[in-house]
Length: 422
Figure 1 (cartoon, rainbow, N blue to C red):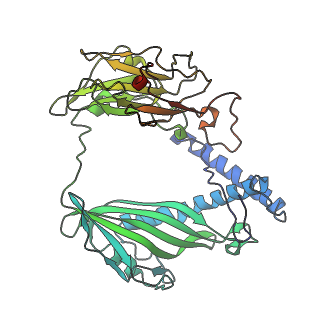
Figure 2 (cartoon, rainbow, N blue to C red):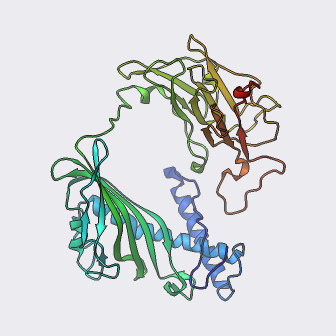
Figure 3 (cartoon, helix red, strand yellow):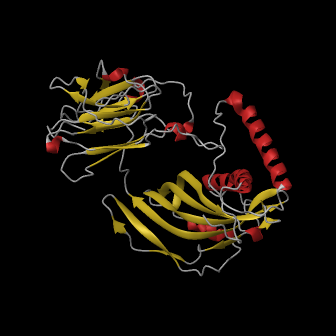
């Protein structure tokens, strides 16, 4: 990674103490305040040091400082802008008269493509990239087709602040933020309307606070549908009432637990498999999409299932159920493991684990990601499993993996060669 003089390149380090409950709010604030203070002191003591290489500690400190400043940009710019849209532009003082806008005035949409149930139209921006107008009405007019807003999201994709936008080449005085916007609601004709695309937002610090300098429309498209394509039936199907809930005690960065849809007994509708930290639930539905727990004595005892998939590995017309467990004390032999399991259903609909079918003798730690595909093109499904181990967590220090542990595993289906399963 080569560093250029005109820009400071940073890794995307996310600072999150993983403290989410109300009683921990003060502790989280204290952690951020303390961290920011240490970063500022370190930057001050190193301000005359050259940036040498990507692994230099100076780079890490600069990245941490940038991330702290970006948190302020999110708080002072992106969140208020989102709320401004949610409030249907009711705050006339949100933009002052100095804010410029580009790409909104000369905008036209194509005729649109019918995608079966909804129409997609691409926006054509006719304004010059250098054309900036100080007229906030142009921004409001961009959303004029909405009669009501249901959902507004503005998410940062990346931020950029070259040396000439920084104080002494270090602290950001201004920055450009590339954001994704997604606005949904109803059109003036009562149709479902979605506008999405990218804003390039220029920001700067004024009186100690980040403010909007200007907004450029980079690209946009809109979707129009006369009726919803999907219906939320979570409550009426009774799924929400039968899946057990557990207090989350692990980091959010580890993700949630598995859910899979399939047909172990070829009946319709699809069965639903849901995993939790402590157990699993197998749900079967009737023709009215009412789901009930289907007792599976062996299957329901499986814990820490992070990934799962129904798949017909042996081509007998009935799906097997593949589970990947984030097991802290997995047991493995040359032909069996406790972190990768395949369950087979009988004609009576009872799932039982298949034994001695997975050959993978290399030592691993903590299986998590799963992907299926016919990797060798023999007509039978294979699968991939990742073993992140200690590298599962995003940390400020290098995560160390035990030597001799494999981090990836590719499992080929051997039924085509009649050599067993995997």
